[in-house]
Amino acid sequence: MIADLRYLNSLMGYDPARTEKFIAIYKAEIPGQLDRLFEQIDSKNFDEVSALAHGIKSQSAYLMAEEVVNHARFIELNAVSIKDPGTLISRANQLREAAQKVIGML
View 1 (cartoon, rainbow, N blue to C red):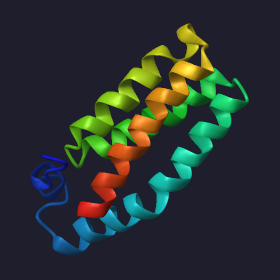
View 2: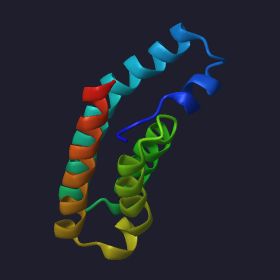
View 3: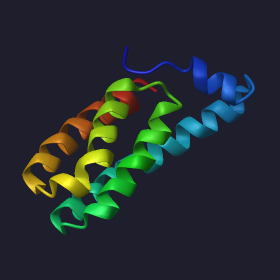
View 4: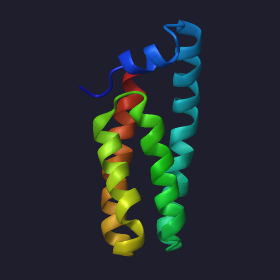
């Protein structure tokens, strides 16, 4: 399953307008956050890479988008210690692909 809205619906008090607002924000914000993630990897700003990945992970967790969460978690937890742009770019590409699937199904 790409994403599951049950958790988000419960957090939003089963209010469709609030759920739709979260989804609209997610769809609008995640692509830019991913672009910034790649920019920070290229700049070797690994603390910022970790922080951006944390934000993507947290937002995606509300959608129960496990593939996105797992890739973002890996980047978040390993960016500072790995300090290897090649590894991070590879994982960030997987993250972007997974996020695009989620956005496409929302």
